[in-house]
Image 1 (cartoon, protein in one colour):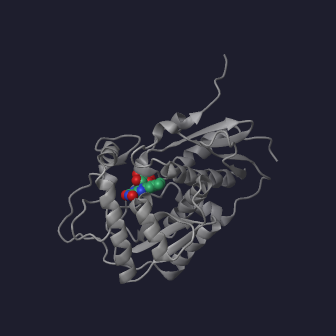
Image 2: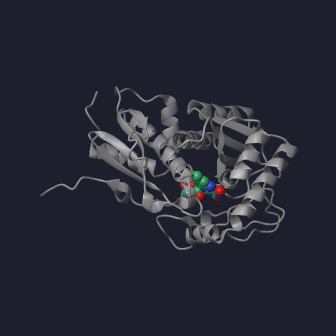
Image 3: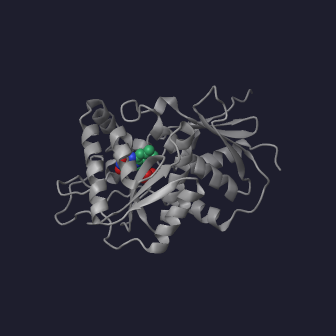
Length: 324
Ligand SMILES: Cc1cc2nc3c(=O)[nH]c(=O)nc-3n(C[C@H](O)[C@H](O)[C@H](O)COP(=O)(O)O)c2cc1C
């Protein structure tokens, strides 16, 4: 067993971690080395006060980054033991990772790790082809492996009922000028290391759309380019809704996203019904589930797209200053 991680190992693992998704691509994380452990913390300067007043979204994003860290270290042969929220007095520290007994990575770890760089949010219409049963099963297994549940919304009436909840949550959010300002501020029409590029924003919403798209200034839609009539909607949930549960859910989200990528599937996220408390409870009740919905995903076969930019890894590392 090694005594501790090195700066080089931190840098390599953080380069994978920053590929995680985050609300508006804010990338709300910082990484550091402390007493041989890698620590991941929420970056308080990257909070979204209007969109994410409770910090839920930042914790989901950091949880997703944490799964990438774990996979990266495992694939390098230096797997980690993880403690979540290790310092009660410093709740921004999401996790501390210390070296476990070195071992060879499992095939699952290798394929999930291989999907990190290929994953991206695909907000364009998907092909109408249904997601095969074995892929659906794998997605549920991915959530369960990270102690969460994944509920697939199946059938026209269930999808319509979900869409009604999602649209009303979307309307509630869009009525808040501070929320709209924040969303608009994170749209990027010029190259930028953060925020949502208009090219990745998906097409503009149309009145006939079933699911509400968060507006990221996307292109106008060509006639006839409607969204798939019966999308596969999946709701990810956790057993509770503490800050720790949300970090657990972030790891499960990333495992589901990477599993989907590995299966050749495209995913977009829609979290409006999770962000509005009344809608979240209506969603939970409609699924007949205990615990808390943490994310909704639209899953299908998409057209090719590209990963969105990230800040250089050096900008998210807190390294000790070396005295000359
Ligand atoms: C907590 C959370 C909530 C999100 N909510 C939405 C959403 O409602 N609509 C959407 O299009 N994307 C949503 N996303 C996706 C982010 O916008 C996306 O991850 C980010 O722009 C980076 O792009 P990438 O996923 O292609 O890497 C969400 C992501 C996270 C982590």
